[in-house]
Structures are given as C-alpha cells and as structure tokens.
Length: 193
Image 1: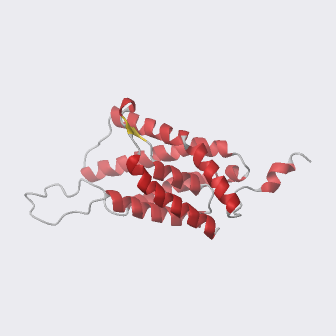
Image 2: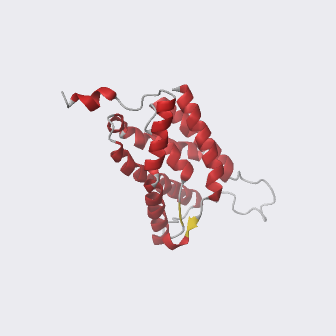
Image 3: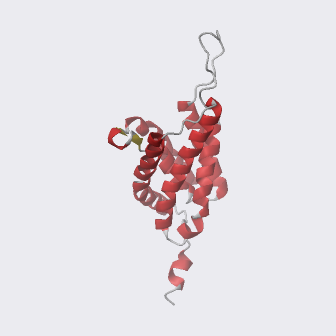
C-alpha cells in the first residue's frame, strides 16, 4: 500500500502544477475543472480511512499553501478587511469531508461497481464547493450565494465528474503495477458458481 500511496502523492503533486494550465469555461458560468480535487476524490475510494485522511491532510495543506493568504498585520486604514478569506488549514477538513463521502461507496467500489463512484464523485465535488461557499459566507458575514454561483458549482461538479473514469483507469493501472488490491476478487466470481 505504501508504494501505491506514494505514487498517488506524486500524481497529486503533478496535478498541483498542471491545474495552473486548466482553462476556465466562460460559456458555462466560468466553470472550472478541479483536477486536484478529482484525483483526491478518486483516490479516496481506493484507500482505507487512514490513507484517505493522510491524503486529505497533504492535499489540504498544499491547497491552502497555494490559495490562502494569512491576515496581514499593519495599518488598519489600509488593511480594513482582514477576515475576507478563509484561514489556513480549512481545506484539510473539506478534503476529509469529500473523502468520507467517497468512503461511503467504497464497499461497492471494492466489488468492482465503479459506476456508483463515478456519480458520487460529482456529489463530493458539489459538496466540497457548497461547504466552502457556506464557510466563506460565514466569514464574510453575508451570504455570497447567487444563481450564477450555484450554476458555477453545478457545471464545475459535472465537468470534473466527467473526467473521473480516466482517473479511475489510471488508479487501476497503478494498483496493478504496485500489487495493491483495490477490488475483492472473490465477490466477482461468486455468482458464477
């Protein structure tokens, strides 16, 4: 399992670089393809809870290192709104929530029914973005929920979900390479006897 987990870490590090080149889709309310979140969510269903939590910690830490600006201490006339962003570390919890959603379909995934994981991937992305929006609304003291924001979240979730079969295929190949058992083989052949 350790070699498989290390391979996922390498892929995630690469995805943090590649995500800088992923375009925004203005025709779909500026929807985005969340590459890092997709790789994490797909990997979360292949790992046990401890591996998933370790992965959520690393992803959240790296995500916040790229996105979160810590409050600036300085002249209050210049830095008037220091609470406008979420604080460093919040993404770890959001990744863990998305990971636990995927852990819920892990028994089906282990039986080889990855199609359920495909659909739940979209749900996990949707929940991640909605919870992040709710936290941001709480921190800013006003609701930032609009119809366009909901459409952005919906289209981003669907777009990200559509690429999950490719990530699952990659994970199956990695698991085979590193002899990590994702599926329970006995369950697939039991019905034929």
